[in-house]
Every structure is written in C-alpha cells, then in structure tokens.
Amino acid sequence: MLGYIWTYIYTSVLRYWLKWFIRQATGTCELQRICSGYKPGAARTTKAEYSLRSSKNKVLRGALETNKDNLEQCVAQITKEKNVKPQKDPLFKESLHICLLQITGNSSLYISVEDLRKEVFNSENQEHEAMLLKLWDLLMPSVKLDSRITKQWGDIGFQGDDPKTDFRGMGMLGLINLVFFSENYTEEARQVLSHANHPKLGYSYAIVGINLTEMAYSLLKSGALKPHFYNTVLGTPELRHFHQLYCYLAYEFDKFWVAEEPESIMEFNQYREKFHELVKTHLQDPDVTLTLTVCSRN
Picture 1 (cartoon, rainbow, N blue to C red):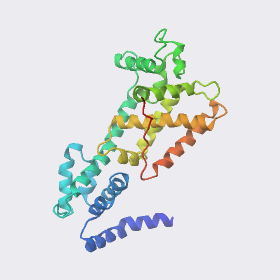
Picture 2 (picture 1 turned 90 degrees about the vertical axis):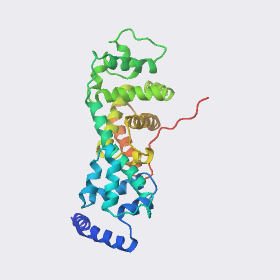
Picture 3 (picture 1 turned 30 degrees about the vertical axis):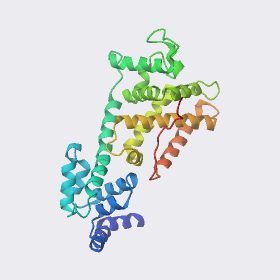
Picture 4 (picture 1 turned 60 degrees about the vertical axis):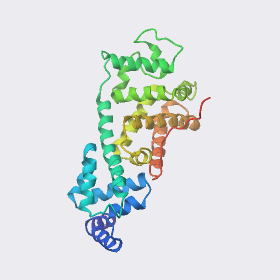
C-alpha cells in the first residue's frame, strides 16, 4: 500500500518538479539526457519510452502511436516542443528517431504476429499445403511421404495423421516458425529432431515447437521481449526477427530438456514452465540478446 502511494506521489508530482529542476541546472530536457547518457539499445530506448509515456505533453505521448512514415515529422515536433537546439545537440534527432522506430515497431510487430496467429491452416490453400510439405522435406529429406494424410507425420512430432489439426492454437504462425527454423538452421533443426526421437528423453518435436511459438507470442504480447529487440534491431523489428527469436527458443529448449533429463514426457509442463521462467529472467537483463549462435561450418 505504501509503495503504491509513493509511486503515485512520485509520478504525479515529484517527478515533474525533479525534471524541471534538473533542466534548469543542466539546460537539457530529460529526453536529451537519455539520448546522450545511455548507449543505444534497451538501456536508452526503455528509458525514452517511459519518459514519453509519462509526459504530460500530448505531442510526446502521441509519439508512441505515430506511424513509421511520420516519425521524422514527429521527431521535429518533439525537438521544437522541448526547445532542443540542433547545433548544440546534433545527435539528438537521430538518436530519438531510432528509439521511436524501435518502440513503434514493436507494436507493429505484435499486430503482424497476431495476424499470422489468427490465420487458420487451410488444406485447400496451396501455399499452406506447400509449406507443410516443405517442412517434411527439410526435416526428412531421404524419406518420402506415402500420402498427404499418413501416420508418418508422427515421425516429426505431429499428433495425428493430418497435421492441420495441430495448428489450431497458433494458426499459421506455428507452421511458419517450424519451417523458418528448419530452413535457416537446417542442421540444428535435424539435431533437435533426433533428440526429440530419443527412446527415453524424446518428445513430440512439432507439438513442442508449436508450444514454443505460444511462448514466444506471449512474451511478445506482454512486452517482455522489448529489451531483446531493442538490443538486437537498430530500427524497426520485423517478422523475421520474431522467427529468429523462436529459433533461439527451439534450440535452447532442446538443450535444456536434454540436460534436465526428465523422467518422462508427462513432466513436460513442469519443465516447460521452468524454461519459461529462465527465459524471463534473461529478459530482465538490460543487455539481453536471445540470439541463436551456431558454429561456422566448413
């Protein structure tokens, strides 16, 4: 209760006067001090986002909702509102522009990801079918499917004879993530599949992959992935950056699962949550980068 009262007093009254006092003493506004005092990445962009969101100025708050095409004009308006002199602070506009690209881009990325999640796998859609068959060819290049509907799908971790039923929760997002991992990190994906088919430590590769898509989606939705994207994308994060984050989760979860040696697949939810908490802990580090790094291949 006391913590809530203090937070309210600070954000409503004290913060405004503290900012005013520091401006009088330094001759710079809070955004200037953030852009010049912190290195590019989550340290800078997170503080800039908080400053904009907490501002009583409509122009500054509105910057968080600005379209990418209008960001340059938005930066110019903020520069004018805060009376920033470009000749005295020549890097301010560029630094703030990058922060806004990252902040607004994260919101746009969520919309794109949500659209894919809502797109239902349709067996009558040739592109959907081609992508599903591509997944098989990438993971099982030496084995041909007997037919489109077959028990063979279980070899790569689907539950039934027709994988389309397994995509209901995450829609096309789940399939696209599986294909992206298999196409861009083929050797690693096949290695993970081999672990998934282990007689004792095995798990359903595709089903777990779709489950990890849900994990990535929930982290994005909650805003927990912001530090990662702010540190790894110097601009607007795009769908490929989300897919790359998924690849990290898929590969690292497999390493985690093998190292933990669960007694059976029945303990999946327990270890999945343990891994989820581990990822969230990493994301609390302002320098976090959840990037899949692989050894160079000759």
